Length: 252
Ligand code: SAH
Image (cartoon, rainbow, N blue to C red):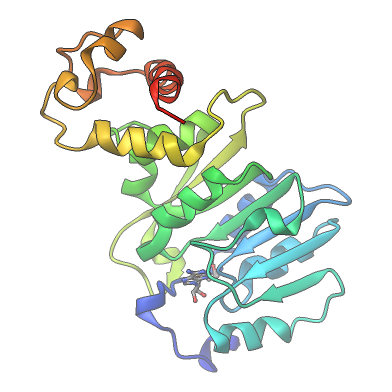
């Protein structure tokens, strides 16, 4: 099997998913149909790549940074496959088309950066991704809220698909994992993701501080938010309302 031929690199988060059941589930959750354009992030030795190619799809792009893995993936003979040696934290996904479906057993060290890149990409309509379980729960707002969780859920409906124990990977990571499914919302009123990120990271800095220490009291009152609450007291709707006022008050 391929595993013997390749040295796995820890700094690239190379933990291969070897459970056929989980690979099948990820592909099922992608709701694949003829003509779909799919992007896989971090193809590795191609376990998920092959699973996706076993389905009826139009095109599969695989992003991978490790040249040894790229070479291995290029060995898969399939006219629908295109392997790109690109960094998924910064690659412009929308250069690959519209209404994309994204899948991946993400490299955990840069998992959040990749989630941010997906969230910013209007062209992604559905994503099924494996992440560190703790990170997944945070993104869903099940644990201490984070700016990235709010950012993601502003653009996507996020759903917990399943937990995946560490024993399903080679080599097993030190933490358990989870699969999330993200579905792009039809109507998103946030039109400038970079500005939105700026506002969110500002509000989430020094969490224990009251909001009025971070953003104008007038703006908070206009948005119907008490200036004396803390960032974890806000709902998703509060953030979106704050954003439209925040944007409007900025000099162009
Ligand atoms: N999908 C495979 C491998 C997952 S491991 C499997 O499940 O078996 C994560 C993969 O992401 C590794 O192959 C690693 O080389 C790749 N990777 C790491 N950083 C990356 C980045 N910034 N962009 C794209 N791929 C990356």
